[in-house]
Image 1 (tube, helix red, strand yellow):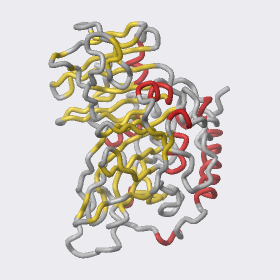
Image 2 (image 1 turned 60 degrees about the vertical axis):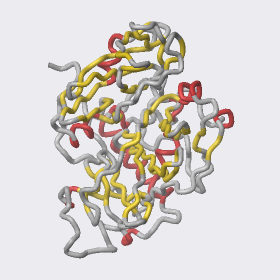
Image 3 (image 1 turned 135 degrees about the vertical axis):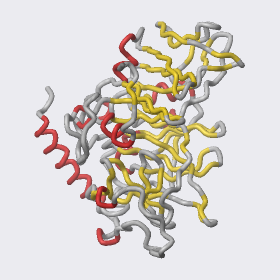
Length: 384
């Protein structure tokens, strides 16, 4: 039985207090807040991209929610702490595939890592359900690494780089206050899906270990019921009422055209737990896959028991030198041109195109309230 909205807020407030207590071990003092750049307050510092007064405290001090700077990994067969349906954030670069369980990311939010030889930060904001990966750039000869500032903008994680202490909005990958204001991080495609679906395609991949150097109740969700809240936790902005605030959407922004694909719209005509829609974004074709079988990380107290929300991903609909169109069948997503069957990760698993990989779109999983706050010009797929 679902709790009332007020009860949920009290539960989440209590959860935040527990999180703060857990995160306070070894955290910097609250007065060590970077507050933008401390290294340079020179006149050359760019103007902020957002009103600093709109950046609010989320509670913890800088790195009070501790990023993982020395990640350790397991082969999938040794990740016995994960159930089949549990959500992981999947990132693949240069043939190296890694899965970052949301049961770990919920408590750390940032992993500074290297994948396929590329320095990256893999990030997750549980308040917005945004799982995003970025390349870590080198600025003036220094490779940036990122921490949690303890601040929020539109209820979204505000990161800071430890080299210049500039604030960065996770939702956009943009530096918003500080020495590097205006700089843009390069996105790396990242998809949230079930551990079972990821492992099926990457039996030799790597899974982030619980050996993080920190004691946390991994597997527990400190934000129980968050993804069915009518009023998002710690969001002070105006809600875009075209969709319920915590509707799950996949957002794509390209060349001035911004589209949100609501899960429930994409999955409306699912067949055998699979669904597919096609759309044009900035005049170019995009295909969106949905597959049942992925648990919500923000529903039940135990993540493994979260309701099935499915997984969603977007791709360029072409492979083998030809344009493709798709339909959902009981065996999976099938292209009409060759009859090949495709996985949620965009790989042909059988048929004439077996082994081919669709190019992933730069698309972001998010709650609607947050996507709309950063992209008010968004059009919603399925709405006229």
